[in-house]
Length: 279
Image 1 (cartoon, rainbow, N blue to C red):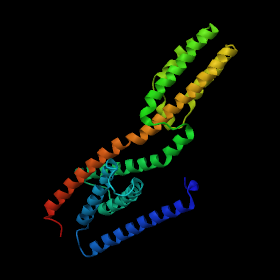
Image 2 (cartoon, rainbow, N blue to C red):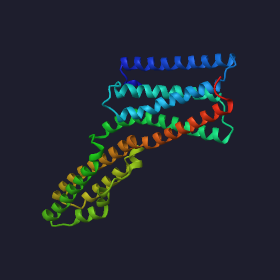
Image 3 (cartoon, rainbow, N blue to C red):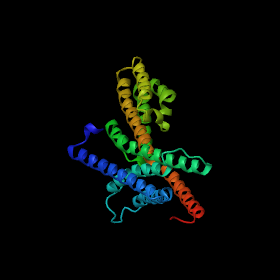
Image 4 (cartoon, rainbow, N blue to C red):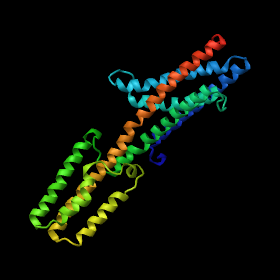
């Protein structure tokens, strides 16, 4: 990906990375100074981490309110990404780079790890899938895919009927019923598409080429049009798989984030209760 970045984009990337590194160094120094002064570092870093997690959670609220003059969503996305990396470092400082011991701490540690991992996964998706979707074929609006799929199926079935009428042969109709109807009926091979495997389409097209040996010139022309429908259907399935993953990974990330905020707040209240408040 880096090879495709422009010079100005690379400069911005290095600037953001430098700012993140500087923030981590300052946080480490702050933590170190608190420890030397015998201040409760776990309480202070815990409150800072909870506040940062709340701020990160507000990013989704910003996306729900695009009409508010709160900077562009692209800027918020970049802030969210780098603040997320900083939250991971702050979490490691807070835990002392050690594994948890108690049951509640283990639960909180696990939920934070899941939030961080799902965030990294979402970042990877946002950086890789859009270009793959564009390169694969025509981009379509996700909500229109079912209607477009139904339209393709009608076009394919019209070709099959035409083959029967024009050639007086049921060869293509029989093949469609046995092999292709299920392909057009519903989305297919989502996992193959996400893994960038074109084997299902290649398998179908090889059967079409094999059928061409037993057809006349008119039937082969219809099979050529039917092949175009198959390729268009495969692109719809690819777009659906990729765009669906981009849309619905948030249904994992956001609920886990909400759970983290609730657990973190409870953890903070318990700690403050047992130590009599921060000193």
